[in-house]
Amino acid sequence: MGARLVERLLVYLLLIAGSLIFAFPFFWMVRTSLLSMSEIATFPPIWIPNPPRWGNYAEMWEQGPFAYWVRNSITVTVLSVTGNTISSTLAAYGFARTRFPGRDKLFLMVLATLMIPFHVYLVPQFVLFWKFGWLDKLYALWVPAMFGSAFSIFILRQYFLTLPKELDEAAIMDGANKVNILTSIVLPLSKPAIATVAIFTFIGTWNEFVRPLVFLRTPNSLTLAVGIRWFTGRYGTRFDWLMCGSVLALLPIVVVFFFVQKTFIQGIALTGLKG
Image (tube, rainbow, N blue to C red; front, side):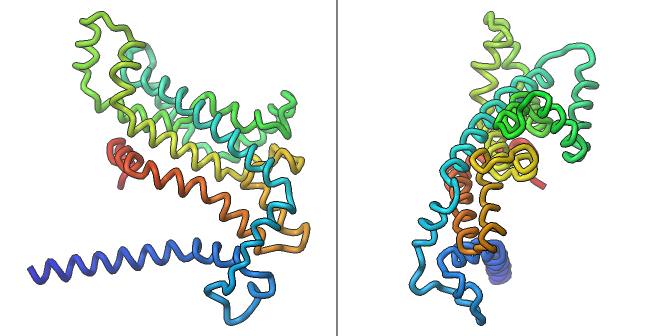
């Protein structure tokens, strides 16, 4: 009993130590956002702002088209999450619950795209969108998501395979077709996996930096992740405004994860993504 208690205490201590290590960058970001530029450069560093400069956030908001960046990020994220989740669900359902010639080979081809580095097809995408006239347009960011992603299809297919096929057979005997089975049986039972895909897509799209940096040009068309670069170089590097923008960019992810963490963890476990 004593050894078990010591073991549990060691586990808690390791978890607390790990939490502090991972939380430190977030603490430093918030702390820097509440200091003046002279206080940021002070050595030894000021750990707790006294008094905190909440006005940094208002000043940061007025210096750039921050409202445009927030609007663009929300637009791209909502459309990408919706499109990717729906198209990936339909594709995964086809790979998992229907039979057609070449299904397994086609699925292997989809998985093979995961091994292609993103930068390999960035240039062809740039040329394609240039011919479409989509450069500096948000279309270039959310339209590709309408066709799903290999990672999302893989997650959902693995989950759909765990559902008993007897459910399909019973539904077919009752006169249901494939669409009825998908909407009435598969989707209600797959909420954790679908939520996991939606959350992964949300985080990936909201934080995406490279494609917006390549495809978008004018200040008002930028997304939030790229827009906060506005504070590096144009006025020197305003670390206080840069950290204010970073804090505001991080808030939606924290809020979403806070409300859906139980479903997200359940989805990770059920789809076999955990180590």
